[in-house]
Length: 226
Image (cartoon, rainbow, N blue to C red; front, side, top):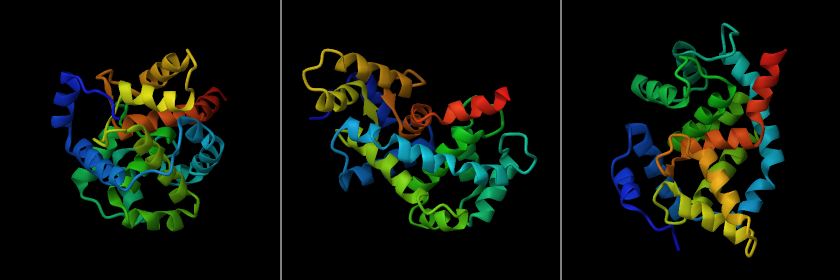
């Protein structure tokens, strides 16, 4: 059974914040109708090392598109990125993706934000985006992004394109049945995902949390300290 929706959840889901969010929700609902291979939250956690390795391999690609080597991809550099990867997108779509992933509104996409952006492109531009892996020289990237999509579908029990607190609790409980700490674990994970604190998690929010869970942010901080 899916999570019980409160009135605020219902209002939220009937009015996505942006065109991009509406597209994400629609794409996720479509993927949810196809099912997921994930069996438990633990099965997601066990994939962390492999996902971490695959995502870190994107660093060389990020540096290639960071043309001025300032540690961030600006709007113009992002347009060049789409051109070089031969991804068909309008200027509005590229701008929407940039704004969605530039979380701190610095007018620059850092490495973890770049990973989130690539995964969103994979979700929204498939099957064209599948060809990107060969252009980037990263054959494992498609499988990694597919795992992330699969993980979100597993959490989205009622298949509405969002993850609620109740759905997160249910996902954790399926793994840790009978453990008194399972509720606290679920709440901690949910709070880490729900960064805008509106009670529901989009695929984009899930991706940002995931980069922290596997330690991508730690890589950036370590480089900044050097």
